[in-house]
Structure formats: structure tokens, C-alpha cells
Length: 74
Image (cartoon, one colour):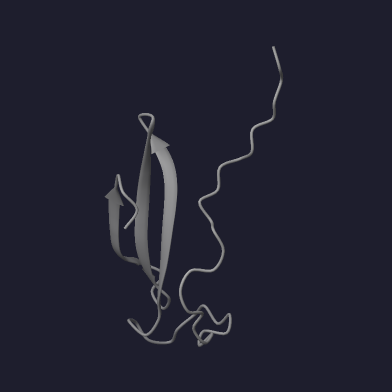
């Protein structure tokens, strides 16, 4: 029997698409609602299956504007 270390899975395959100008410049706050929204996609396992949580956050109110849970990455 051989003991092999398996490489950790990563779906990242270099830069995809065009890199846009950094308009936020690390200023993650806003004085008005709906001026800046931020998105995040989190992958986790649920009942043994990959599940994705996609959320939009308003920079002013710090509230979730919208979210979706899906079995496919959207």
C-alpha cells in the first residue's frame, strides 16, 4: 500500500476575462444606500453535495440586498 498525498482541489485556473479599473480603491463604505454593492459566493457541502450561497451586500446599510442558494455556481 502506498501513502500518497493528494493535491487540494482548486478550480482557479489563472485570470479569467478582462481586469477592470479599481474604482473602489479599498473604500468599502458608502454614505448613501445603493451606491456600492458587494458580491460574495461561498461554496460549502450540504448533505454531501456542493452548494453555493451568493449574496449582495449594500456598503452603506451593511444589509444583505439579495441572496440565492443553489446547487450550481451562478
